[in-house]
Image (cartoon, rainbow, N blue to C red; front, side):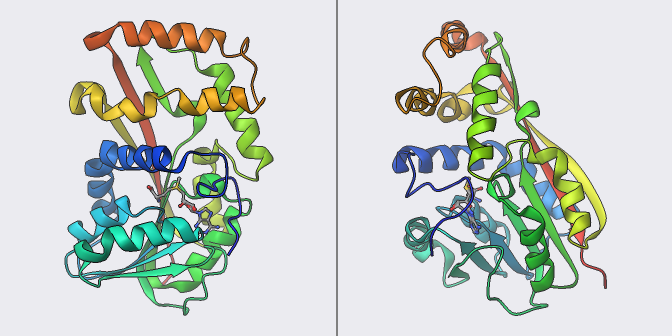
Length: 273
Ligand SMILES: C[S@@+](CC[C@H](N)C(=O)[O-])C[C@H]1O[C@@H](n2cnc3c(N)ncnc32)[C@H](O)[C@@H]1O
């Protein structure tokens, strides 16, 4: 199946191994708090769980560990990432992960079959997020819940010394939008859930801070490689990223005094009993 939307790691311009490491770091940074919020929203061991847009499988691995008696269906559109996840999880999952190559908008899975669904860093890339939420609604059991974990570009991070990312961020927004995604999807998560039919919609923030988990955990997110790649592709000019690079160097020069705080969003909706 061809990848669709604004995330196409194995067919697009991203350097695949670097991108996979970045995804791994993003799971590690916020897993503990995401796990406790998922439990607070009602995720429990033994449930039949759907993970949509599962990518290379690092988040799936955490779910397998958190839920030792659950089966997890991992829906992923990209065959290369799906294959990587299947290999990665083969030993670790003990047959509890069912890999399905499909789009979240048309999973082909039976109606009313899951207790809990999670979509992490997926909705940001979807051209039709409401259709995707409706499909998940269809395959959830009555009383089942969907949690969407995503960011909003205007609320992504704070740093000290300040790193001036505004121009680059605006450019990223444009590029993702031109490919059908929405880097500011965080603010729309509740309305997406409501429009798809979910009730009891709620929203939580997950804050990760270098004073708590250490600056090293954030290192893969601080890599300027993807920005420099955008310059090479002519998506942004060298003069446009000049202030970004100056402030990045000041940030790096601050060494142990560097501080970074990131904000994730977790929206939950329930399918009526
Ligand atoms: C940024 S990655 C996040 C991966 C994983 N959820 C995580 O948190 O590490 C987004 C994933 O969603 C997948 N994806 C994008 N559009 C999709 C769609 N329509 N249906 C299913 N998966 C999709 C991408 O191929 C990619 O693996």
